[in-house]
Length: 268
Image 1: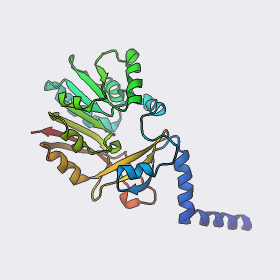
Image 2: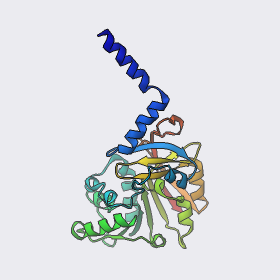
Image 3: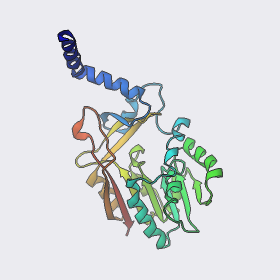
Image 4: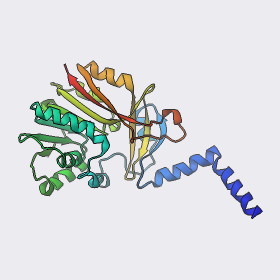
């Protein structure tokens, strides 16, 4: 028993060595199939992409990624309720044109109709990567009983929207949301943003392993993020936190996040 305890202490000591800990985490990061894992801090989207394991899928434009989240199509989560509240308000005021950036196969479109009624004239447009939109369009042929969902790869179509919705997608963009919106001839009147990772002091990128691919992952600085939208004429009308959403970047505790954020902004 004394020998076994000694061996156990030796193993514990080895696993606390920084180099070995990083190696063990790298193995876990590369082999990950179910978790959202994060590794490294990088100055740019391209630097984070370059740090991904070679010859592995990069980003969501894959058949495997298109098959994700199917279990969420009939489930509303606590983080959804601020968005549901504001959508209900906006629909009641006559908003009927919604453009969702990064809506996957229409996950929220399907889930939200289980707890709220949509306007008769609602058009819910999802814009995502090609592989995901192709899967979504095929799925809608049998699943979209209301016939209000469509898919559009051209971001300029967001100029036609009353409501712009982005939930858990801004972190995957090569450019910022403000840069995207600045390219539009007309700005959507209402922005609903949810599941947005923001740091109080710094802007940076990390690399995510999501079980199907590796993704450069943007984390913006809170005040700079909001100021960039205010410069486009938007005013923050509501703010909330997503306390059950975190981003733990191993070996970088000060740059890890214990919450994400949501916002409703209105164009002046």
